[in-house]
Image 1 (cartoon, rainbow, N blue to C red):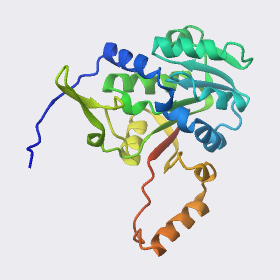
Image 2: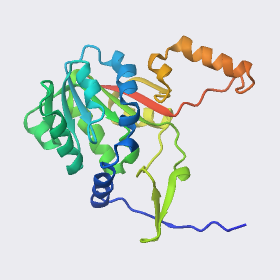
Image 3: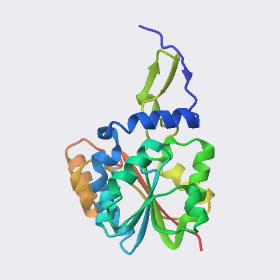
Image 4: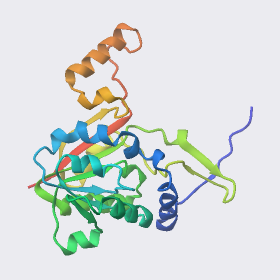
Length: 250
């Protein structure tokens, strides 16, 4: 049996994070929002049905934006990769409800507020400092009745996606994930940051039927698994995606 070797972990700096995502921006099929963006927006629409304005926070190349625009929201994008930000501006410049690609500095300078801030598959990538910045932005950028919606992998085992770079002799997570979130850890963090938790739950955006998931549907799935001896009665179904909806504390 080959003895497992311990490798140095790659330290994600601002520079190599930018280089990583400038590279990935060329491969749209790898983006979560490219794969299931329509499902995400359709399923979460009930939380922002009265919203007029939206910010896609960490938009990547903008795969989520067409589905937000389809709901009639005036939509802005905030992205940190130059390549992705330029792509977003190019793709949506002729869309009447696309406000533009904005920076944090522009939002602050112009006092902009949003009824919806959607943060899809972002918070698992962040170090403590940047995570703190994101949640402070939520409090600053949300309108008084606005909601911020986070999605992230549910209880991800980071070790399952580690790969090795033979050039630098370091290992790193294939998708640059730095942390794993659970319902308990994300609830605790949200409360520590002074935001109001509206809802937190798990789901599977990869299954089209889950767009219309409700309690009855979930119960039917669970009963089927129990009756098939796949799941014990007191066990919970493990869904791969975690959703957290928050508001500002008034």
